[in-house]
Image (cartoon, rainbow, N blue to C red):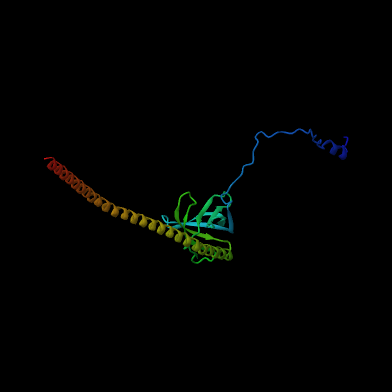
Length: 230
């Protein structure tokens, strides 16, 4: 039986090289670029940390997980208001979205130095709801950084809100003063009107007396003229 040379056998099994025809296949569907907005374009990030968020379920009297992702403190470039926003890492679904205002406090969760809790009026579900949150970080340092920044932001909002309250109070007082002045002017007009009304009958009486006197003098003159003719 004849043997086949290994080199010849290898050459027989070498696949032929694919020829480049230069043909271009156009895509069936043309996809255009779409601008994606997050709603955070007018804000600057003050804090950006990985964490896991929980909310307290009052009905079940237990903590329920809201999601794992990135928690941010976002400061608005115009009005300087700061809000806390947290999105889930994969779906980017919002699991916390609320303003940090004066008077808000955050405290360490009992028995866990990596966690802290706070209350807020949250809008993550599309409606304003009072929530109690608990957030857990990978390290104690991250938790402390979060708490310190939270308190710093809450305290920084006090002067701004006090100024707004003062402005609102001043505006209310100004409107009150204007209203009082208008009432005074109206009262003065009402007081002057009766006096003018009372003066009118007096003038009419004086005019009537003058007319009567003139008529009497006329009669006297005519009488004297008749006596003279007689």
